[in-house]
Image 1 (cartoon, rainbow, N blue to C red):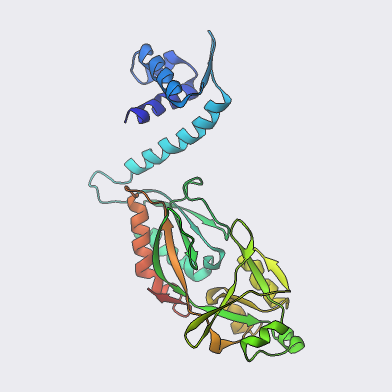
Image 2 (spheres, helix red, strand yellow):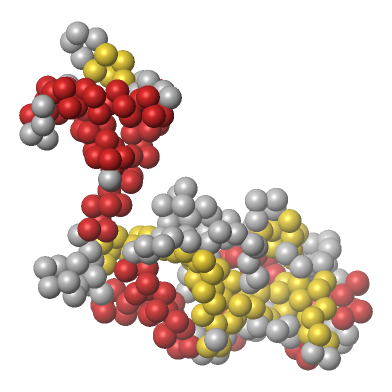
Length: 305
């Protein structure tokens, strides 16, 4: 609590630039404001303000600290304002991040139903295929497809996504049909680059109930889901993707499923959020709602957990 109070005094001084004005605004004595800032600087081991007889100005370290403190105080204000006086209405800002594969009409329509159920929650939606740092980027929770690396994040599996291996008809006509996994050596693959190292994700196939990984070669490498699928439509080679991302192209005939008898085991879909003891109620509400509604987000390509 003392640190929180110190941050509040610090932020007010950064905004007003005067010890006297801060004391007046916070209805505290000027010595209290001065001592609080001195103690904060001593505990951090840095000088946060440059002081002259006429003004108080943030140092470079102080500016960086202010950016973080402002975000922390904003989050605290939003958290304490989440409930109305009856304690029944969830409110506040909820920042979620989803993979590009989910940025489809069916998912957005379902997400709209969440906002109708919780009208006081303001959604901030991020769409990306890159690895995000939830804590550093201020993201409350994220949806991800596939196995997850070990981390301090809490992962709650809500279902699975059906995967499809497919290619453009013109490509198959030129390079030949596939009947067995051994035929893959004669074909180019569209590789999806994922993670900070931009390594191509392996494909997976199911052979007699066992997982058989395969690393595609040749073709082209892409790091964004929509471009990944479009490369397959353009005839660069074979690709493997969540069914939801290729459904319209399969229906139109622009892509054709191959090696269907070797379809991989559906990939897990998880909600990730920081491992915190006191998780914001709107995050709990969204995770619970998503698990309950996941089976109907897209019944052709998603399975309930």
